Image 1 (cartoon, one colour):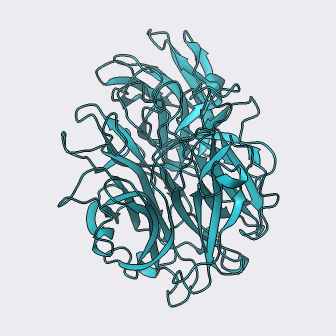
Image 2: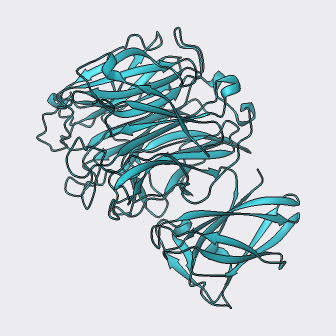
Image 3: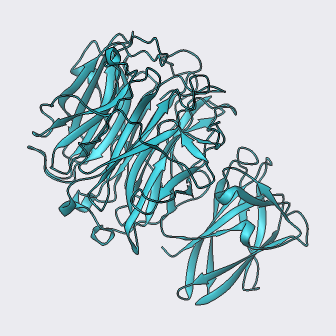
Length: 557
């Protein structure tokens, strides 16, 4: 899309990634996952990579960003390696004069990370020294000569003067440790971002991968080469039946021919009912002068047929009209007790019902395979969504995936680092099936509710400032035992604050809240509590300093 850094959206970076799928026979159910995973949500995630100050370039002018396009995959078709997390990103730091795709791995639920490989397209294409828009995909079935569990990396590469664009794919047969070139998917003109109705660009951007219902490998991407038909940009695909060695013709998913709407940054995932859902941003929406790139979606019976292709599809929005915009990603995620699972969508920022940029600290979730209403699910990691607090492309083209046991949602994103002025890459996690309790619905004394767009439900509880202030949650435990409690809070002071927490009026525990970027930027604190079977109360009272509460989550690892 266009990344909008202040009032009008973005410059463009392009992007993205793939997603899951396959045929119904190979759809993975929660009980098929191997290996336990535990949510490790605290603070603002764990650090994967931090570019040193003064090292980043910016290929499009303006401020250097350090990193964008944080992409991740959690292995699920790789035997004893299931549960391993792999991360790559657009690294805007040269290594020996060229850009590369770095490959990072975690084998301890995202707590620590190590760089295990480097993919350097300039080896195959010496004149193409710049990389962009990576995506990761693990094959769920055998494709050509590639066995199930092959890890694929797609991206767009170009020369340093950005005079051409090429979509390429690499594979790894050892879970990311070594990589080999597979093929060029497509080529296009100069990698120049121009969303105006008079644009003459012919770029191919932002590849992502999926397996269609017939077992073919599909590369979805953004295509600017159809302007003669009034199409500023289409989201399209090419299909391979030989494991990515050769590719069929271009087929459109959405190609509005009004010389204005500009869909891009497509990702696709398969649903339990066999249908596929695609999400993408639409640049020049709500208008060319108010370009905030809202997210739309379309569905397909097989991942190949998206009729009518001139249609934009449906805008994703909550019942109150709020939406999301810029650089989305979609995945289907299994959930315990619900065969529908949930469709999860991430994006750079949130939108008001009128389409204005407003926050951006929540996934959007649909629990009925695309039908019915959408709801919010808090991010594990937050960032400067509107790039007004010192960020540059923060959160742009981020990614997420579920754990191998289906209990945890991991999020990888680019988070502004005000010390270096660049984006770090961070990964955090939240439990998928935790019980969620909203602070504004608790029994409150000597506090007040505060409207906050990014708070779950639009409200948080503040002014927990006095000895008489309390927030009492009434919760239900299926069985007696120790539960992990995640607390979503904000603390706009410069020092750590605390609350006293008592369970069923027992002895008080202390929960600590490190400072967040400001009042309104949420973080996570964590505490273990012992609950009785049935109804319990958890009461928060003032400790030291000041903090506000959005919600608590309870789960048993």
